[in-house]
Length: 438
Image 1 (spheres, one colour):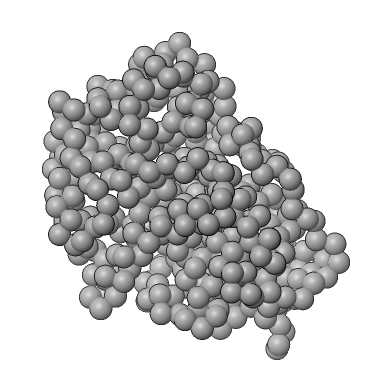
Image 2: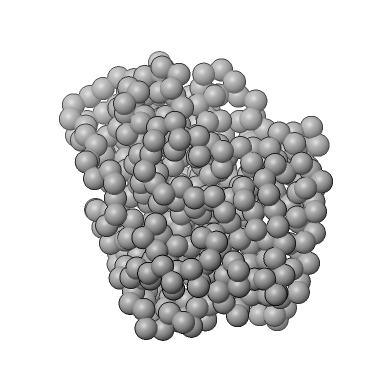
């Protein structure tokens, strides 16, 4: 789906990530027709992770991306590499209810493994993406602290393998230099990175292993034949035995059944000028990625050159703020008033996708068509798991994919016309409940 609006163009967004892109060399444009075993549609984490996993196993695979690899959410997000596959790692009971008692531990472990998959790829292929361990769940009130304390105990009882540490009010400024928080939970199993460099670096690794990666390749339709699927881009075609749909929020109406089960949601980020060592150490002494606990949360971290990258705001209507700095800067200053004189050098946004149950949607439309989407703003690491699940299923091991296919994903009510206002109303109600609790 070609989206052209105030935050989308044919090129990468005017982001800090694009400005510091370490993999500027473009991938090829497909000219003519090709025949492969597997064609992947979508050049974000899901598609690239699938291509890399298949290429590692010697499968002949082509990936087609309508714009540039990392153009969508994978190159626009906050760079927070967090665990959990669907439910939070602290809520094992929800894993049992969602995946069933016999598969709960398998999928809970997948929530740990997904971060490891990112780190393994970075290490194995020497991807320059500033991967840094350390995440902080910030508490704004006593209820948040109680939930985080109980969550820590539950994760440890389940055997969580990484360091967890409760930070109280006295010590919170050793993690976040702000009066907005009363404490929180350090999780050394979470991380952060340069997301655009990660996805483009992984694509380069897949290409080096034999995968064909094509940019500027917008798919117009899929034609199913008895012995093949033709991925049609009007001027050229990829013929494949199997297809993987990894378009996420930018699927458009290519496959209506999938489009009706997720909603694109706008999210936006600003990046400051470099803060210098002293100010950076004041606001984020431990260099953790940070999220608060609200429904429409703030999230932030430092870049490698010590800028603050501050994100938030969720728009469910499809309309973007007219001035991102005007919208985001006051939110940043509520957390860090000491940055009042700091310049904002970059502003950008994009879409993530959300399903009604906020659980990743991973499965098969039929025996030859696989899909993954709807990570609900929590996709950097889980998308890597999803890609591996699909690659494993294609090569003969579909155990995890079958578990994911047991989860029911209902279409949004109201169809394409009314689903956005209906959801926007629901989200406004959730934010109202948070205000009342505060």
